[in-house]
View 1: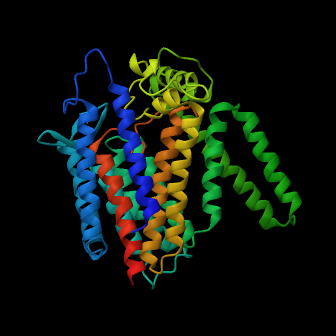
View 2: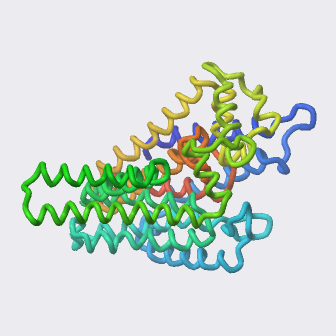
Length: 407
């Protein structure tokens, strides 16, 4: 098995546990190890994660590849079941109670979707350069996205966009990604810039493109069509924004800098940035974070655990932390590229995409670059479902790579 991946996995999991311990540490009320605490429960979750990793490495890899569609079907049924019998936590019906445990099916749906998606895309008969084939492949992750959106869990929905990375690697045109980027820019611009100024700018761009190319009837029609599509999109964004509830509008306005609400919608992010910035260059030291100790930042052991890294370990600690995740992502991509099996290559890119989305969105929201949505930091945040799902994702790929080496 790939030792660098194993090492970075163990380091991230261990560092995550120490940070969870630091979050809940209170020298006046804590008396040794306790399973009633979050750090105690996380240690149990880590133990089961190690057993899962061992099972994956011992088992035949065909258990995961040949039954990929079955696992996908089971997870779809669980996502449907959670809408009916699920337990609501923090406004989302995303958990199923199993005795003392709360299982989040959407976390395991990422594993099953990655396996099924890779199996479909890696079929030799498929021409992945065809738009129809790409659309059919996209249905594998669009279906769970819709079901998770009904819970609603916007963070997990966003993660499934990671499957665009393996699609791009297997032949999807880069223009699809460019179009998505332009749509995101226009979305933000529609909320920040005056409607008429923005439409005037788009008209100028369309006119420039017509003037720059041959001024034929076809190009004029395409320019007019471009202006019309962008105009309808901008008006649609405005309409959708006005349909949101007042508190949702406030959250978006705070993120975009149009409003200041440090005691309301912007409280979490404001306290998060204070905690990270207070660490300075070297940090305050392990177990010395004042923002952490006095619970100024909500959900410090889950969604906002990066604050603890910034406060206690400072800029140096954050740099090492980011470097660890960067190494993990680059190593997975490198191993994926050397796979002789198309299945393993597509699956590897899917794993890298999922990890990247979790890492990028979680860190981005703690420093105010992205909206606050509930999404865990891989191997770091408190929680059994996320840790087990991330462990399965990674070690199934490690097993695929190890099998190729043996062959």
